[in-house]
Image (cartoon, rainbow, N blue to C red; front, side, top):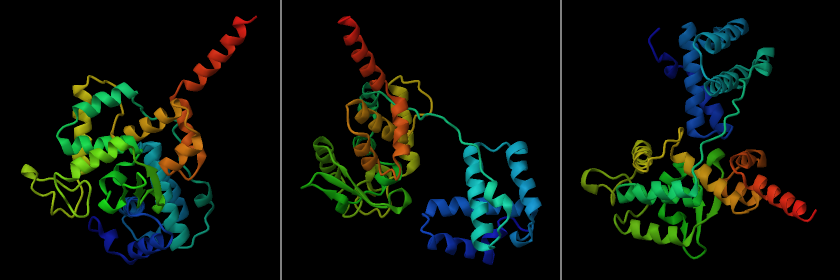
Length: 296
């Protein structure tokens, strides 16, 4: 069969509609549909003709032969399981037990001094404004890119985050310095809708652009600033600024529930990973015990 024929089938359409009804976001739907494309292209036949044993062999092949990472396998399992359970209505035992092992990797995090160095070296101005906003408000990359003028509540000094992960809205505090920076940056382009519109050659697209700055552009700006700052940590990306924001709040004594709310985490367990990224609790415990011992 012709490559990518899966996208032209009724099964593709049914799966996409079913995911939309389940409230899944666009990026999740794309990932799940891609996982099904990979399956049907592997066997080169319609998915309704794939048997449970074949599905088991496929999972083993992707894990042991292709060598997919646990993160990629999780997407594979989730997408394929969704299709067979919700579209084909299969109740196979395999669908209940198949799951990828979880990696227990801690995310990279920058110190406050490292964040200051990176931001001071971010060029040009639109990249600096974007990266500073992402860090100071704890935003996800996509949340920052799609910020709109109407999302900024200057009177309350809050940002209304729309289209957050899981289609959840939230309000996050807007520091005074960041508010002033956004006002200063917006004046440079005066786009009536977007805070961070796409910038073309010579910066001429800003006022009229209907799309935000590119992911590649801001990720590249961060890499260049990191390199210029002489920071050698691995795994540093724009999302690292969000991890750093949460860690710095925790180090400053901010309640974990407040950090959870600011980040938009559905479960406190997700936020608790930042407990592993700071030594504050250990340092506090050391000081307490040390004070007791001094009196002995």
